[in-house]
Amino acid sequence: MKQITTGTNTTGIATSPLDSKELIEAARAIPPSSPGSEADAAAVRTEYARGSGTVGSVPPPASLKGMVKAAGELLQGRPPALLIDKLGERLQFERSGTRLYEALIAKYDAEGGFEGGPSRADLEAIRDDELRHFDLLRRAMERLGADPTAMTPAADVIGLASSGVLAVAAEPRINFGQSLQALLVAELTDNDSWRMLIDLAVAYGQDDMAAEFRVAEQHEARHLELVRSWLSSRLALDARGAPTTTTPQRAA
Image 1 (cartoon, one colour):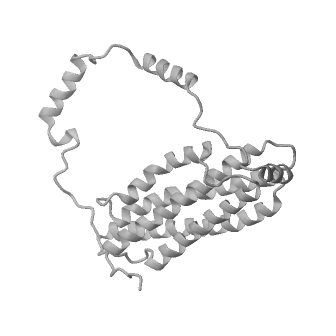
Image 2 (tube, helix red, strand yellow; image 1 turned 30 degrees about the vertical axis):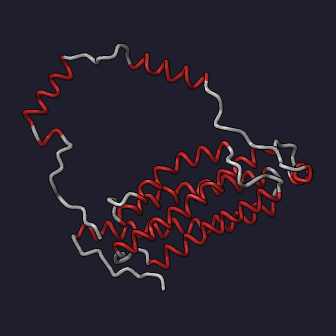
Protein backbone atom coordinates (compact mmCIF):
# COMPACT_ATOMS: atom_id res chain seq x y z
CA MET A 1 0.00 0.00 0.00
CA LYS A 2 1.36 3.41 -0.96
CA GLN A 3 1.84 5.51 2.18
CA ILE A 4 1.25 9.23 2.69
CA THR A 5 4.61 10.72 3.67
CA THR A 6 6.27 14.07 4.34
CA GLY A 7 8.30 15.03 1.29
CA THR A 8 9.61 17.85 -0.88
CA ASN A 9 6.26 19.49 -1.55
CA THR A 10 6.93 23.07 -2.65
CA THR A 11 3.40 24.03 -3.74
CA GLY A 12 2.75 26.24 -0.69
CA ILE A 13 4.23 29.73 -0.34
CA ALA A 14 5.39 28.99 3.23
CA THR A 15 8.30 26.96 1.82
CA SER A 16 9.97 30.21 0.68
CA PRO A 17 9.04 33.22 2.86
CA LEU A 18 11.24 35.68 0.94
CA ASP A 19 9.88 34.71 -2.47
CA SER A 20 6.31 34.61 -1.17
CA LYS A 21 6.64 38.15 0.17
CA GLU A 22 7.77 39.40 -3.24
CA LEU A 23 4.97 37.47 -4.92
CA ILE A 24 2.31 39.05 -2.70
CA GLU A 25 3.75 42.54 -3.15
CA ALA A 26 3.83 42.11 -6.94
CA ALA A 27 0.26 40.88 -7.01
CA ARG A 28 -0.85 43.97 -5.10
CA ALA A 29 1.19 46.37 -7.23
CA ILE A 30 0.47 45.02 -10.70
CA PRO A 31 -3.17 44.98 -11.82
CA PRO A 32 -4.48 42.06 -13.86
CA SER A 33 -3.47 42.23 -17.52
CA SER A 34 -7.07 41.88 -18.69
CA PRO A 35 -9.62 44.62 -18.01
CA GLY A 36 -12.81 43.97 -16.12
CA SER A 37 -13.99 42.94 -12.70
CA GLU A 38 -15.72 40.11 -10.91
CA ALA A 39 -19.03 41.78 -11.73
CA ASP A 40 -18.12 41.81 -15.42
CA ALA A 41 -17.20 38.13 -15.33
CA ALA A 42 -20.47 37.30 -13.57
CA ALA A 43 -22.40 39.23 -16.22
CA VAL A 44 -20.75 37.19 -18.98
CA ARG A 45 -21.57 33.92 -17.23
CA THR A 46 -25.19 35.05 -16.84
CA GLU A 47 -25.38 35.97 -20.51
CA TYR A 48 -24.08 32.56 -21.56
CA ALA A 49 -26.49 30.79 -19.20
CA ARG A 50 -29.46 32.66 -20.64
CA GLY A 51 -28.43 32.21 -24.25
CA SER A 52 -27.38 28.56 -24.18
CA GLY A 53 -29.58 25.66 -25.13
CA THR A 54 -30.19 22.51 -23.12
CA VAL A 55 -27.94 19.48 -22.74
CA GLY A 56 -30.31 17.35 -24.80
CA SER A 57 -33.79 15.89 -24.86
CA VAL A 58 -35.64 12.68 -24.13
CA PRO A 59 -36.20 10.81 -27.39
CA PRO A 60 -39.72 9.64 -28.20
CA PRO A 61 -40.42 5.88 -28.19
CA ALA A 62 -38.78 4.29 -31.21
CA SER A 63 -41.91 2.45 -32.33
CA LEU A 64 -45.68 2.76 -32.30
CA LYS A 65 -45.78 -0.16 -29.89
CA GLY A 66 -43.49 1.77 -27.57
CA MET A 67 -45.74 4.83 -27.72
CA VAL A 68 -48.79 2.74 -26.81
CA LYS A 69 -46.86 1.07 -24.01
CA ALA A 70 -45.68 4.40 -22.61
CA ALA A 71 -49.16 5.86 -22.75
CA GLY A 72 -50.59 2.82 -20.99
CA GLU A 73 -47.91 2.66 -18.30
CA LEU A 74 -47.68 6.31 -17.30
CA LEU A 75 -50.58 7.33 -15.11
CA GLN A 76 -51.71 10.43 -13.22
CA GLY A 77 -51.54 12.53 -16.40
CA ARG A 78 -47.87 13.38 -15.91
CA PRO A 79 -45.43 13.92 -18.80
CA PRO A 80 -43.60 10.64 -19.49
CA ALA A 81 -40.36 12.43 -20.38
CA LEU A 82 -39.58 13.28 -16.75
CA LEU A 83 -39.64 9.72 -15.46
CA ILE A 84 -37.72 8.43 -18.47
CA ASP A 85 -35.13 11.17 -18.02
CA LYS A 86 -34.53 10.24 -14.37
CA LEU A 87 -34.42 6.54 -15.17
CA GLY A 88 -31.74 7.36 -17.72
CA GLU A 89 -29.86 9.27 -15.05
CA ARG A 90 -29.78 6.34 -12.66
CA LEU A 91 -28.86 3.95 -15.46
CA GLN A 92 -25.89 6.14 -16.37
CA PHE A 93 -24.75 6.36 -12.74
CA GLU A 94 -24.99 2.60 -12.19
CA ARG A 95 -22.92 2.10 -15.33
CA SER A 96 -20.33 4.49 -13.91
CA GLY A 97 -20.55 2.73 -10.54
CA THR A 98 -19.71 -0.60 -12.15
CA ARG A 99 -16.63 0.94 -13.78
CA LEU A 100 -15.67 2.63 -10.53
CA TYR A 101 -15.53 -0.67 -8.66
CA GLU A 102 -13.66 -2.31 -11.54
CA ALA A 103 -10.99 0.40 -11.20
CA LEU A 104 -10.77 -0.16 -7.43
CA ILE A 105 -10.41 -3.90 -7.91
CA ALA A 106 -7.42 -3.26 -10.19
CA LYS A 107 -5.80 -1.08 -7.51
CA TYR A 108 -6.49 -3.72 -4.88
CA ASP A 109 -4.73 -6.28 -7.08
CA ALA A 110 -1.75 -3.93 -7.40
CA GLU A 111 -1.42 -2.88 -3.75
CA GLY A 112 -3.37 -5.22 -1.51
CA GLY A 113 -5.85 -4.22 1.14
CA PHE A 114 -5.63 -3.30 4.81
CA GLU A 115 -6.96 -4.43 8.17
CA GLY A 116 -10.64 -3.56 8.40
CA GLY A 117 -10.80 -2.76 4.70
CA PRO A 118 -12.54 -4.54 1.85
CA SER A 119 -11.47 -7.85 0.42
CA ARG A 120 -11.45 -8.40 -3.31
CA ALA A 121 -14.64 -10.43 -2.89
CA ASP A 122 -16.29 -7.45 -1.14
CA LEU A 123 -15.47 -5.17 -4.06
CA GLU A 124 -16.61 -7.75 -6.59
CA ALA A 125 -19.93 -8.24 -4.79
CA ILE A 126 -20.73 -4.53 -4.86
CA ARG A 127 -19.57 -4.28 -8.48
CA ASP A 128 -22.03 -7.05 -9.33
CA ASP A 129 -24.82 -5.26 -7.44
CA GLU A 130 -24.19 -2.11 -9.48
CA LEU A 131 -24.37 -4.14 -12.69
CA ARG A 132 -27.64 -5.75 -11.60
CA HIS A 133 -29.07 -2.31 -10.80
CA PHE A 134 -28.06 -1.17 -14.27
CA ASP A 135 -29.98 -4.09 -15.77
CA LEU A 136 -32.98 -3.36 -13.53
CA LEU A 137 -33.13 0.20 -14.85
CA ARG A 138 -32.66 -0.96 -18.43
CA ARG A 139 -35.67 -3.24 -18.13
CA ALA A 140 -37.74 -0.51 -16.45
CA MET A 141 -37.06 1.86 -19.34
CA GLU A 142 -37.93 -0.78 -21.91
CA ARG A 143 -41.24 -1.47 -20.15
CA LEU A 144 -42.11 2.18 -20.68
CA GLY A 145 -41.20 1.99 -24.36
CA ALA A 146 -38.02 4.05 -23.83
CA ASP A 147 -34.61 3.46 -25.37
CA PRO A 148 -32.10 2.70 -22.56
CA THR A 149 -29.17 3.37 -24.89
CA ALA A 150 -30.15 7.03 -25.35
CA MET A 151 -28.31 9.68 -23.34
CA THR A 152 -31.07 11.69 -21.67
CA PRO A 153 -30.39 15.20 -20.31
CA ALA A 154 -30.18 14.03 -16.68
CA ALA A 155 -27.92 11.14 -17.75
CA ASP A 156 -25.64 13.62 -19.49
CA VAL A 157 -25.46 15.79 -16.36
CA ILE A 158 -24.75 12.92 -13.97
CA GLY A 159 -22.18 11.49 -16.35
CA LEU A 160 -20.27 14.75 -16.25
CA ALA A 161 -20.67 15.04 -12.47
CA SER A 162 -19.35 11.52 -11.88
CA SER A 163 -16.39 11.87 -14.23
CA GLY A 164 -14.25 13.29 -11.43
CA VAL A 165 -15.02 10.32 -9.20
CA LEU A 166 -13.95 7.93 -11.95
CA ALA A 167 -10.82 10.00 -12.54
CA VAL A 168 -9.79 9.50 -8.90
CA ALA A 169 -10.22 5.74 -9.16
CA ALA A 170 -8.27 5.56 -12.42
CA GLU A 171 -5.37 7.84 -11.36
CA PRO A 172 -2.44 5.48 -10.60
CA ARG A 173 -0.75 7.90 -8.18
CA ILE A 174 -3.80 7.85 -5.91
CA ASN A 175 -3.51 4.81 -3.68
CA PHE A 176 -6.18 2.27 -2.88
CA GLY A 177 -7.04 3.76 0.51
CA GLN A 178 -7.34 7.29 -0.90
CA SER A 179 -9.52 6.01 -3.73
CA LEU A 180 -12.10 4.81 -1.23
CA GLN A 181 -13.01 8.48 -0.80
CA ALA A 182 -14.35 8.36 -4.35
CA LEU A 183 -16.54 5.42 -3.36
CA LEU A 184 -17.99 7.44 -0.48
CA VAL A 185 -18.92 10.29 -2.83
CA ALA A 186 -20.55 7.84 -5.23
CA GLU A 187 -22.45 5.89 -2.58
CA LEU A 188 -23.79 9.03 -0.89
CA THR A 189 -25.12 10.22 -4.25
CA ASP A 190 -26.49 6.79 -5.08
CA ASN A 191 -28.46 6.50 -1.85
CA ASP A 192 -30.22 9.86 -2.15
CA SER A 193 -30.86 9.42 -5.87
CA TRP A 194 -32.57 6.04 -5.43
CA ARG A 195 -34.86 7.54 -2.79
CA MET A 196 -35.86 10.35 -5.14
CA LEU A 197 -36.43 7.93 -8.03
CA ILE A 198 -38.66 5.77 -5.84
CA ASP A 199 -40.75 8.82 -4.91
CA LEU A 200 -41.04 9.75 -8.58
CA ALA A 201 -42.10 6.23 -9.58
CA VAL A 202 -44.81 6.28 -6.90
CA ALA A 203 -46.02 9.68 -8.13
CA TYR A 204 -46.39 8.17 -11.60
CA GLY A 205 -48.37 5.25 -10.22
CA GLN A 206 -45.55 2.80 -10.94
CA ASP A 207 -45.88 0.82 -7.71
CA ASP A 208 -44.25 -2.37 -9.04
CA MET A 209 -41.32 -0.36 -10.33
CA ALA A 210 -40.99 1.43 -7.00
CA ALA A 211 -40.98 -1.91 -5.16
CA GLU A 212 -38.09 -3.15 -7.30
CA PHE A 213 -36.21 0.08 -6.71
CA ARG A 214 -36.62 -0.25 -2.95
CA VAL A 215 -34.64 -3.49 -3.08
CA ALA A 216 -31.86 -1.67 -4.93
CA GLU A 217 -32.02 1.13 -2.35
CA GLN A 218 -31.45 -1.44 0.42
CA HIS A 219 -28.38 -2.71 -1.41
CA GLU A 220 -27.04 0.83 -1.74
CA ALA A 221 -27.61 1.54 1.96
CA ARG A 222 -25.46 -1.50 2.75
CA HIS A 223 -22.78 -0.33 0.31
CA LEU A 224 -22.63 3.04 2.03
CA GLU A 225 -22.34 1.43 5.46
CA LEU A 226 -19.44 -0.72 4.27
CA VAL A 227 -17.55 2.12 2.58
CA ARG A 228 -17.87 4.27 5.71
CA SER A 229 -16.47 1.46 7.86
CA TRP A 230 -13.56 0.86 5.45
CA LEU A 231 -12.61 4.52 5.44
CA SER A 232 -12.81 4.71 9.23
CA SER A 233 -10.55 1.67 9.55
CA ARG A 234 -8.01 3.11 7.14
CA LEU A 235 -7.95 6.45 8.94
CA ALA A 236 -7.41 4.72 12.29
CA LEU A 237 -4.49 2.74 10.87
CA ASP A 238 -2.92 5.85 9.34
CA ALA A 239 -3.32 7.78 12.59
CA ARG A 240 -1.43 5.05 14.47
CA GLY A 241 1.24 4.79 11.80
CA ALA A 242 0.43 1.10 11.57
CA PRO A 243 1.32 -1.04 8.54
CA THR A 244 -1.62 -1.16 6.19
CA THR A 245 -0.78 -3.59 3.41
CA THR A 246 -2.22 -7.08 3.27
CA THR A 247 -1.61 -9.66 0.58
CA PRO A 248 -3.91 -9.12 -2.42
CA GLN A 249 -6.56 -11.82 -2.76
CA ARG A 250 -6.58 -12.29 -6.48
CA ALA A 251 -9.37 -13.98 -8.38
CA ALA A 252 -8.88 -17.67 -8.98
